Image 1: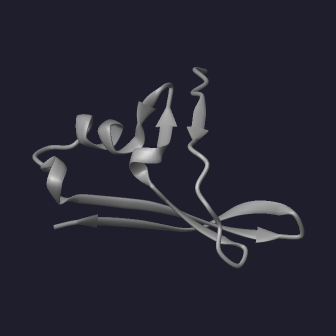
Image 2: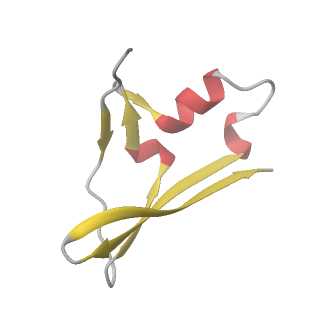
Length: 71
């Protein structure tokens, strides 16, 4: 099984919540939005809006939502 390395550029949190745009999330060094576009069938770069939301619960961060908008 292949293992991918994921990274996130530090993004300021407000009140224990943070929304990170796909361009600040990397998979094996490639921005997540570029990874999504490279596997799409016709989505244009300017029409893709992806954000990962995380929430802090007792000093740990959990993914709490994923916004995936095309349009």
